[in-house]
Image (cartoon, rainbow, N blue to C red; front, side, top):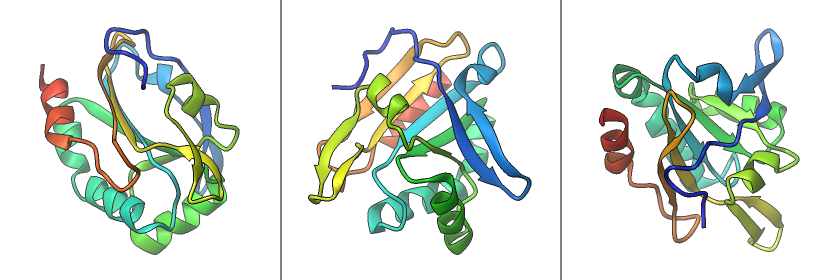
Length: 157
């Protein structure tokens, strides 16, 4: 079960790879400024994850119009995420949770995905500007996508 709505969102500092090198992605940088949509996903270079991140990338302006920043988190290395993003024109911020600290803090660890190891489950959170969780969802299986209409409704409140 993911952390509950109304909980203080666990802060994190993860790495993302940009053309300028490795950069920090810190949730609390958005506190007091904008809402944040956190999207946990199992692995880069997999079909459902690629489709989800391509769709999110194509709709980023819709989230921006709702005053939100989107951060997608997986247990892949930032170098893998960068190559995957380039290959698939993914523009959403990808953050590497290689040590699974954020995945565990949000209680969305998926054990032994396809027998290869522990990953992030597919999950979505909306974090308010006050740092409180406004929406939390972990999908039933890694093949299922979050309810993006409910995510946007939570942002609009």
